[in-house]
Each structure stands twice: as structure tokens, then as C-alpha cells.
Length: 223
Length: 220
Image (cartoon, rainbow over all chains, first blue to last red; front, side):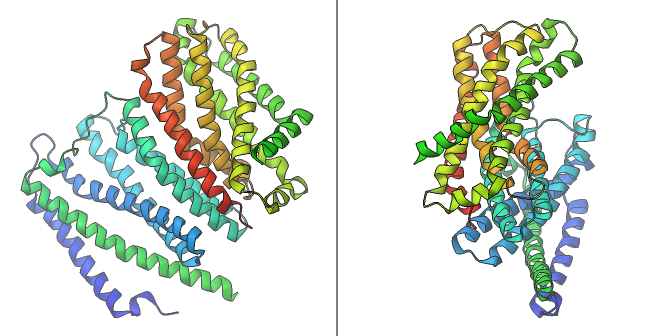
């Protein structure tokens, strides 16, 4: 099987994304305005929110891949689901790391049961179970079906978890980025740019991971 | 066909009483542990009682659903069950409703020891408490039956079941604790209607998802 970066188009995308990410970091550090009461801490939101977007997008793709796996019965969708679950969990971990980094100076403590952060934590735990199922589930064909079902159930549960956590602690609604569209252009444009760059990065990561899983499957099948 | 499957579940259980006895004994052990580990005034403990009650129910549910699916493994009974020409969604429904019946029996029997051992007063509106408890049991069991259907035939099923179930069922536990707390304090319905809506949403959404997915989950 061909090495992923032997493909010219993939190499071009890799170089382009490295350039875009470097530009993004420079843009966030140098060009975005300082928010008066938050200073440097606010800048983490240019990474935190895009990570959350990519994480949830990825989990949405796990659900779609699960549905497609059941409808089409095609192995490819299982690989897409696994790849998306892995990358989604990576980005959701970044959300759970960057959230407390921002919260420590702003809220005075690393963790508050803020609805979105709590929903993210619960979803992260569900996906830890998902990977345990993949690793310790036993029979390979059955595990693929179980994983597809879990991907669907986990995403269906997200809005219910969010609403329940939101009403569970109604006094905690101090997340600062609720009205992102009402932010001044100096913040909004770099934010949207970062969101776009993270999405492009995600696309390449997903493609790469699917390729790696295919290679691993083929190696196992050859043995 | 659903009634036949439900009858089979109930018949097996009433003959062996494995699930209900395990659930009740385990529930009693949890109540005693709570009583020993929270030796404080009833005034203080009443604030934590709803949460303690639903934690106990959650633990006991794990025992119940695991046992309910585990006995199907013996002599590979489940393979024979799913090879029968029936809608597999009905198998899910029968597991859900039978689990709900066992859980409700267990709660009725553990209700008095829970309140007496922890020395707290009964809810002011017992019928309201019973009605909401029935809905909460349906919600817990629909999620538990679906997750158990997934985890049952996996290796390490006894470990995977609680790991998968607890985060997925968290909205139900939050809602159940809030509803029971509100009823114990005699708060008006308008203050806790949202929690009942969440419970009903879980029943409808997971009921439909479970019914649809069970066919694919149990495919050979």
C-alpha cells in the first residue's frame, strides 16, 4: 500500500496546513486585541473553541459513519468511525485541558460545572468506554457493530446531557463566548480564521488516520 | 409476540428469583454502607438522600441488567433467541419492560429500609413520588437495556457495562435527584417540570433508538 505522503496532493496539503497553523499562532499572539479584564488568558479561546468545534464535528462524523455502516455494511465506514472517534477524542482532550487553563486566572479555579465543559467531559468519558469496547470487546465483527451503535447513542445523548447539566447548575452560566458573533471584528475575524484552519487540519488528519487504519487492517489480514 | 417474550423474561425470573434477590440484597448492603458512612443528623442527610437513593438504584440496575442478559449466554440461549423469526426490537422491548418491573419491585421493597435506616421522613406526597419513580425507572432501564445489549456479548462485559452506562445515564440521574428532592421538599410542579420533560425525552428517544438499533446490534 502506498505511503500516505507519497501522494503529491497530501504533501501539498501538509505543507499548506503547517504554514496556516504557524500563521494562525502568529495572528493570535500578535494581531488579536487584548480583552481588558482577561489579557493573555483570553487568547486561548482561539484554540479552545475551534478544538471543541472539531471535536464535536468529529463525533458527529462517528455517528454518520455508524449509520452508514449499518445501512451499507461496508467496512470502510467502520474505519471512518474509528478514525473520527480517535481524532475527536484528541480534540476533546484539548478542550478539557485548555478550558481549565483559561478558567484558573478568570474564575479563580480550574473547574466549574459549566454546561458545555461538563457535557464535553461526559462525552469524553463515553468515548473512553468506546475505546475500551474496541480494545477489550473480543469478537472483531461484533465489536464493529457495537462501536457503530455507541457512536450513534453517544451523539443522540449530547443534547439531553447538555440540557440536564444546564438546568442542574443554573447559576453557572458565565461562559464568555456565548455571543461570538457580537464580538468586534478584531476578535471575530481571527476567531473564524482559526476555526477554518482547524477544520482544514481536521480534514487532513482524518484522511491520514483512515489511511493508517486501512494499512493496519491489511497487515492483520495478511498475517 | 412482545407479550410472549415478556412472559418468558418474567417466568424465568419468577422461577429462579436470581435478579430480584440479587438486586434487593445488594441494595440493602448499599443502604447500610450509606448509613455507616454518613452518621450525621437527619436534617443534614435529607439533603443528600435523593442522590443516595438514585446512586443505589443505579448500582442495583447494573447488577440486574447484567444478570438479565448473562443468563441468556448460558447454553447460548441468546443466539437461539435471535435466530427465531421475530422482530429483534421486541427482544429489546421485553428486556426493557421486564427490567423495569424488577427494578420497581426492588424499589418498593427497599423504600422503607432506605428511609428508616437513614432516619429521614417519608416524602410529603407519596403518590407523586411513586408516579415519578415509575417514569424514572423506565428511563434508567431503557438506557441500561440498550447498553447491556451492546456490552453483553463483549469480552469484559461486566466491566464495560457500568463504564458505558454511567455517563450515558447521567441526565436521568441528575433529573431523578432533582425530582425526588423537589417532591421531598413539597415544591410545586412548575419548579421541577423541566426534569420530568428530560425523563420523558430519554424514554422516547432511547426507546426509539434502542428499538431500531437492536436489530443491528444483535446481528450474527
